[in-house]
Length: 211
Image (tube, rainbow, N blue to C red; front, side):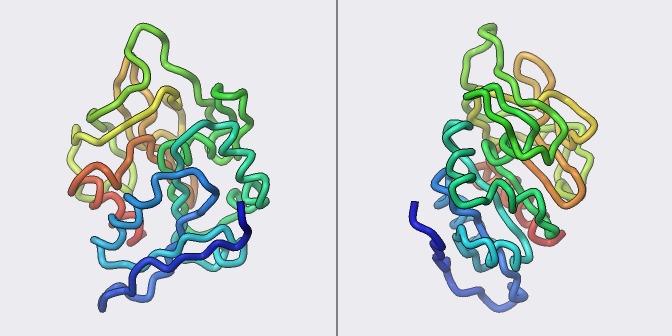
């Protein structure tokens, strides 16, 4: 992967407040949908793997779609595996991004970034894997869910999950209750895709950008 990839996504409309949002580019992620969702909210986003640009951001989004071990290797190739846990601004991991922020993922026997103190494991063969589609979130416990009602439906695509833990801020049930969102200090993670979850998902993204 080429180094220092930077792409500006739209000019910020008036009222965006000059907020600098960086989407981490490491070759894994549903980046287009996230770009478009941020645009609809009236903000500018930058796609980058440049360490200094990421550190200078007001908000950082860490997306991810794909396989855990190969995604972690891509992070290591640009030293982002070292940088991400040191970030001080609000950081939002989405789907695989959230899973990589955990201690460990069974997929590919992958050591994670250790931001969330939980191991990611696979659903059993009792249920159809991957879980694909809409499911409810409840037991909401964070400003990330300001204005979001209990039991709203969000869009998910995943075979692995983070069990319930002290850092769980939203729960979903598929075979069992599991963490559909996590929070530790300035770090947030959602197993669901807010950028694919309609108006409710966009409200969650807006809440993150306004933290």
